[in-house]
Image 1 (cartoon, rainbow, N blue to C red):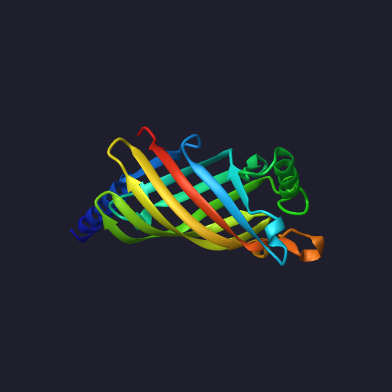
Image 2 (tube, helix red, strand yellow; image 1 turned 90 degrees about the horizontal axis):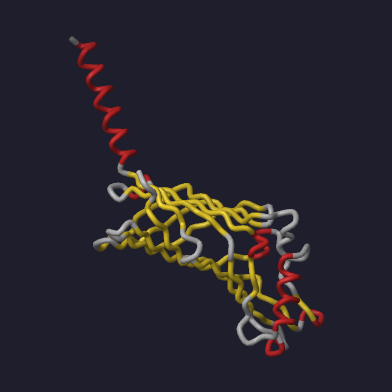
Length: 210
């Protein structure tokens, strides 16, 4: 009798775990409708002669595993092709943009020949609040950049729509020096870019077929 009871409990636990796993839906990031941008400001005595930089990723992929019943069971990951980063810098000449991009992708900064990918993988997801279909989250994970892996926390606002679409926004500041990158400077340092950069994500993802 005891053996039967134990087997029953084990079976019930297995069903419960399977049920929990089944509630996690998979969403694929739509790179055409999403946006990943990097903003780097200038500083220095003659900073008026330099300009801030706006960089956009044009090739990336990602996946969200979402459990609405228990957000802590969710996970997110993405991979950016470092070579796909494009300098936008509105108001600057095409020549200046190309020069900045060549420097950014080269050995002095990202060194994309050696480090072709920028990756993020979550380790935990915490729900701060929920209002209807909108979640305020803290997504903790590891960012791999320029051959260096560092823990980061992304404050994320996420909305899940009935049509199977997920939209999320996140913004985080990073130090280039934390990833082994020395901020570029010219004119003996009278004009240089700040160590701190701002990384923003505007993500649209679609639910995968079961």
